[in-house]
Length: 280
Image (cartoon, rainbow, N blue to C red; front, side, top):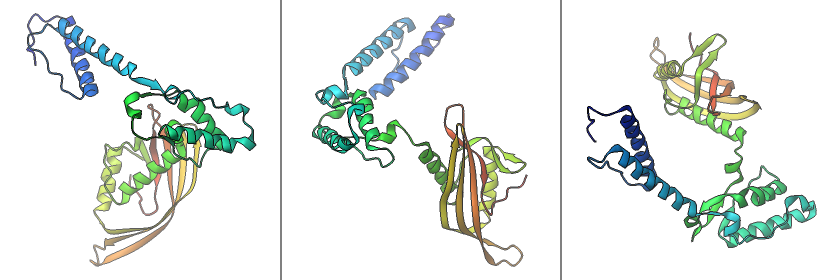
């Protein structure tokens, strides 16, 4: 790294920081390390790095192609002009045509044929993709990648949380948590407090068996979601008085409340699981 001259001005320091950021950005794009050039003035290095970045962006831009142009601009009817009777055949013709260009639309059972046709002709046709990605390979596209299902997103988060809760290890760094997690009517814990309490409880457990874990209901109201699972499991632990292993079976409702954070991600803010009562 270049040594800092005693006569370095605030502008030089700002340019040096900008050069570091430009170098990191170019390293990520090119996959190669961008070393500093010894004794090169920061102003000259800044111009050089900006020129390299501009060249890379122009090359990337010139390599992009609209999907509709790549597949020779086919003439398919607008979805509004297709009758219900003709829709099935039109959608089949459309997906067959895409297949001739090695483009596969993965099926979705959550949207209608009309919505799928609209998605392909209005959304997918207009995306831009690097030309090189389309040569010689099949490309797969999913409706859900463009329109994620929040119900699925929340369900997967809760089930991943419970997998770590019971079987693996939750970490304070896990992105499940809100700033505070309610675990009782008057108890709210930080992520660190919640994880540490759970670790202490799990140290007493010898064995765990999950018999049933079924989603009963899941509601979303703007930035708040609530989910209820029917759960049935057993825990084996050692009785410190008798020194014998004892098994307890817990059956009931596990409830979860989630909220969206400032980055628009779902986080868990309330947990209630039969058999786990957290002290204040």
